Image 1 (cartoon, rainbow, N blue to C red):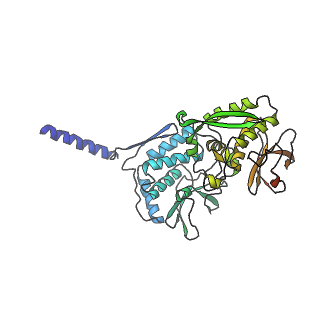
Image 2: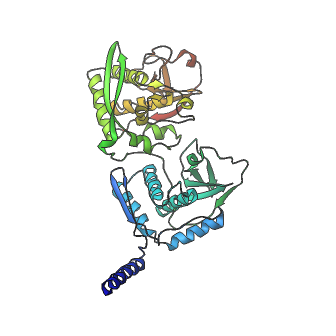
Image 3: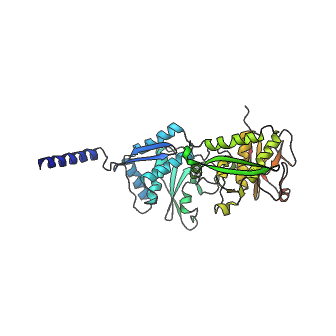
Length: 402
């Protein structure tokens, strides 16, 4: 009997000690983020609930309670990843999303999940804010870039772009509901957010699988087997319709690059530059099925070069991005992106122009159509219905002198 009482005393003492150190839940958060393990203690002293009516005062109260909570361990964990890997802002935001999900699942309490993301982004130094629109909570970040399919607004001369519009099905009625900004000044939250992608995480090899690509060129059939990863599709799922310069220059993941580019280089080895570009143009034109965005995704969506490889179907903007990427990577030639009212294509600057010339800044570029047309167009030829249609140079690429 005495022994049992002694055991109970020890258990109660250990429980007291655990609570005195803020570990009442005894819970550690641990998850994988593209090959890195993110881990931090998440105790009762760190949890902040939100079951109130959505308003500026209840959000201010949430922030005040977060500042009193033990938030430092999970903020330090994500900042440690940031310091180690120096990820682009978009990749870092995916880490914030996963961290918030691990602490406050979206399905359990969407407002609380969103508030955790907002808090984490601000505590990471970014200038983020919240708007209440009717019964919806919209989460914005300060960015100077041109994003076309997301709501934005200006505050104190700065542009803010919505980060969670997709959670509402890209459908929020701003005309019927008054928008109210929740003004909370957070020290140190001053950095702007960039959608530019310069590197992708080192995705695990077991996330890749083979994809076969085939096309014919001069009556010869070519077959390529490349590695693609669904993690790339996942990390870019909600990437917005951005300026051409941003998504044209998104890099290929290492495994995809290493299985595609060497094969293409081998196929065009010994060809003149013009013939090699023609080969890349035909590869981009015929190795994939065509489908407009509305049919493919139900809305406008611009695919990066690697996304074009990932999806079985793509449109003219997607082909233009992939073709641009291949020419840049293999030949690094000057290019201009030509935007017609309902079409996008690319023109390349050769030593000597070929066929139809496009003049830009005093230089002649030759049209290279990477999207299937009624006829198999050679370099320097536009589809007949576009010959008299006005276009704009949407983006110009000039190689950096080496």
